[in-house]
Image 1 (spheres, rainbow, N blue to C red):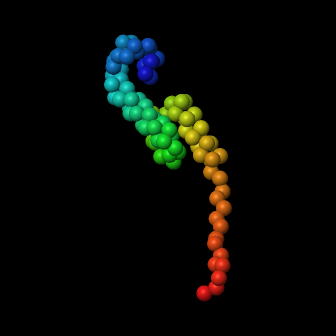
Image 2 (image 1 turned 90 degrees about the vertical axis):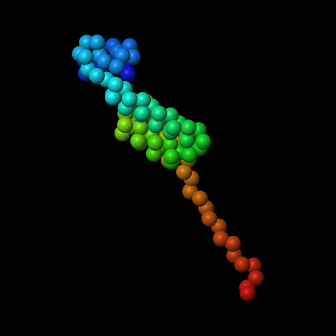
Image 3 (image 1 turned 90 degrees about the horizontal axis):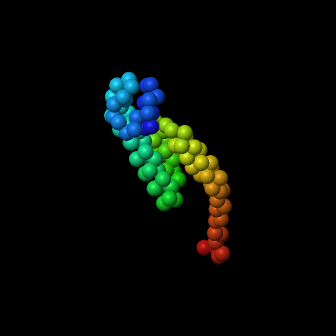
Length: 98
């Protein structure tokens, strides 16, 4: 977090805002958790498991929605929809009657 969410002062990594004295440790922890969940989603995406990645990205957006997470979520959703191809099932017919 670069700026205080209350007064927008530059934080420089501090857990307390120098201007408004807001305690930001919990907010920073939630932000960290969101990044970790998004990282796990990226891992699943790299493994080819778009469904698991999408679940984790939705969870990351609930924890700490950022424009980047929303964009990544849209990309994964779009990629998953475009890669879903209809499958053709063929049935083998018996060659000789019993």
